[in-house]
Length: 348
Length: 66
Image (tube, rainbow over the protein chains, first blue to last red):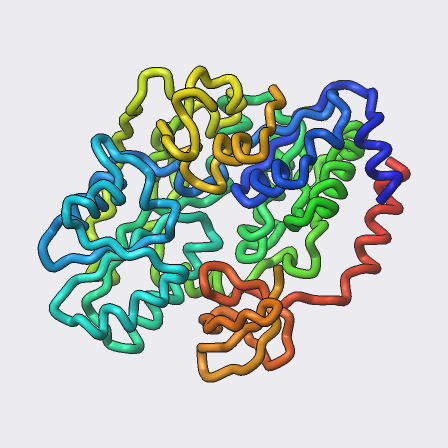
């Protein structure tokens, strides 16, 4: 490990840009002070890997509308509570009488719904492939248990199309730190077609500081050698094929769809929606596409795609802080701006 | 951080994280008590393998020579 640290700190070759596309990696990079362990010629860029950050305001507005509907309870992970739609957040709506519950796990909604059958419970189902598998397991449990008063409002995304978008539209990325948890479900082979098409290496990595440093070392070596393989440095959890049971469960209940991303727009086949035969579990998720920027100077859209670092936004750390966020990237603990702010990361 | 499976009951399991025990969904992977598992949003996603150290050592030897 000492040699790897030395290599990364003293690297003096051509500049390399490496993107991570996983909110947990973004948080870990900042938490472990990784940028301070790298040569200035190794530049880390956060990509569209925070599920809350990439969710459009249309979706938030629909969630708030549901929460204010009599007899409806909205359940969500904590991050989604404070994200603002076109006018307010779920937290604001709760002050107006909305029924909103924060849950640790989607499955926690089943006993709540069973206890109050006269109400409709809606889970705010955002996330990537990893969490989609969890929602598929929830639907499976609902089908089995016969609980009928639970629905999902989905904004589910898949990684390859948006990585393809970044390579095609933004460019300038020399290597990808591939998302560890997504790869647990999909398998590391998911990234092979993109690596081949754009001749860019991918390293699947875990989330500890040393695991990330090892992956960065591997990526710099591969970039310098023109090696565009996908390598798996998280073999204790990730296989080439992934979790087949989870993949089958996802395919049973969900199907690909075009999806809207904040800062990007519609990306073909970049989302997942409930299949028609399971539409009774859907709370009106389709066609939630438009997005509103609340503050004219907010740069969330550019930060999400890696076109701008958080410290480049004129609001960062001034008008926009975790206590008073102007954009979604400052709300979520996986958001780039939040991560930069709380860890005092200031690399440009 | 992985947790350790304490007990399994159908598609539910109890998983220990450094003394903090949680109930987790176990329908996406085959598990048994004692397994080290990765849990996300209350759902077990994978059983952690401890047999991969050799493959990483080989890979890093190869990378050193790039």
